[in-house]
Image 1 (tube, each protein chain N blue to C red):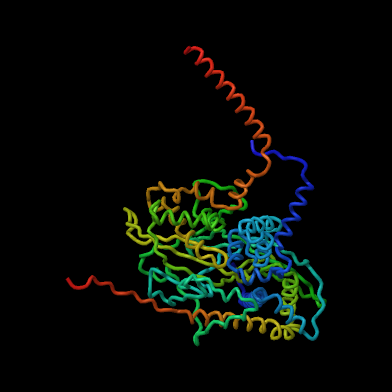
Image 2: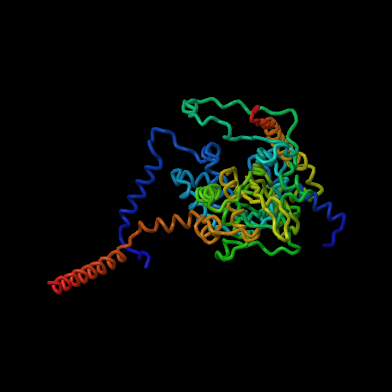
Length: 157
Length: 369
């Protein structure tokens, strides 16, 4: 696959914020959006639609793929009044989550609009996710044990 | 002949369903269960319904449990039926469980597994005494669990990667150009089944059925002498390539339980002795199911290691045809639907046979006299 360094960086960046938007709680995304001082108007390119993604695992954990089951996913695409388009693909069935993810995606691609959401939405959501992950990782570490095995002897004789 | 459709009874059916709704609600003096309460406080029931319903959506599974009055196979049926109403956007990239944000990981085989033995939120080591404090009304929220100063480091190496360099454990192989994995939701069961087809069936399979099969194997009916190499529970990101983008994005995080069972293999002319592995993977926290699945997966791989297959757990047709509780429940429970025509036909036949039997006996008796 031919890759251009500039494009690769751009798509990596986009991949990163789309992932953050998808992994955020729908309520957090809505709250961050509602707190924007001047949210831009947008129209639906594709109305939010809920469907399924078939989740694949790896045989043995690291082998070839197998189909383990499906998950619900909602997707949406929007166009800002200024012309930029964005998409949202988010786990679950929350239509507003998908639509707002698409709107933020469009804003992140518009140099004039990006500063309004980069910190107040994307970075904020990323911090909340990192904090949750850190809390779980600390709780997990607090349950770490050292099992010791008893030495079994048959005694003298 | 199966059952034939009957007409009539609409009024009785409506009344029965009204009574069902009333019974579902129970005593109206007791506050109604909210779906969010099921989702948050009966989370392992939710996990089982998502796993065997083969659809990851905590709210839908919780709703199904409420609607089914806590009858989990009925809830699984509801979830399976709902999923058929949704379009499929495509398939994810395979989830990478070694990168899991692990909340629990124990190895019963290898004490010093790198990353350590992390108990996580477990029933293990509880005394299984009823806790009457939970029955008290207006209970206070428990103290948050303690947090270590240093968070658990990720990724946590798994049992297979720990021994990878030594060849003591069999390696997972990947084809250079892997075929699309078998999809039981689009293709019928076929035999002999490959491992991808078997694992999909087991992942959707009934926990009780797989548990009993695994137990039968442990007790000697096709034993694989398993050791629990590793169980891990935690969150993984699901990656998907939307058509509009052409590159993978994470579309969410899901909770998975994974189990690797180890079974000794004495070796063959081609293969040196080593441990073979059985694999279990479920949505949510379904540890009993993941362990059972790993034992059954290994038992069903008898052809690969040249084991004699004479036990039920090694018979893939027996296992795969009977592991799905929606199919099994449907076939057993259809017996309660009207079979009046079958019974009528049977009655006529038996009456005729009895008459003929009586006539023959009478004739014999006459001849003897």
